[in-house]
Amino acid sequence: MTPVIPLQHFSSGVLAEVIRRQPSSPARTALAWQIAVGPALARATTVKLVDGVLTVRSSDTRWALEIKRARGMVLTRLQDLLGASAITSLHVERDPHSRGRAPQP
Image (cartoon, rainbow, N blue to C red; front, side):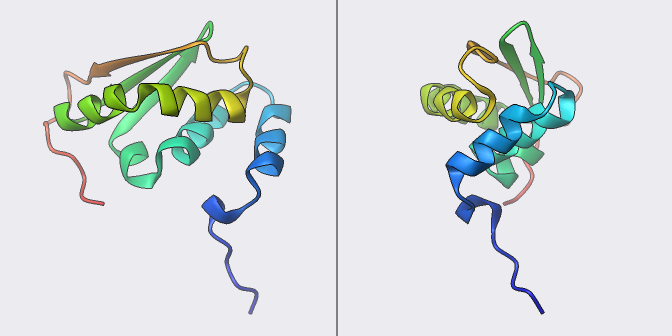
């Protein structure tokens, strides 16, 4: 049986190149988001990229605060994955339709 290599251990440069070569799509953006922030935070959020602005909707105020605190680092990671011109800013908002609880990691 072939061992499974965690995505985080895959060469970041190679992974970024593969992602950047894909056509822009919601799935590509979601994958880059999950890689940039990790699975727990990715489960607690939804993302939408329009004209270089990534809008992040959080299911919980606490997650939204964490994203805001790490905004610079997250934006840098996303620019590495998607290309600096593909994403220029990050906007965080609380999802008004969620029930307010964050999923457990």
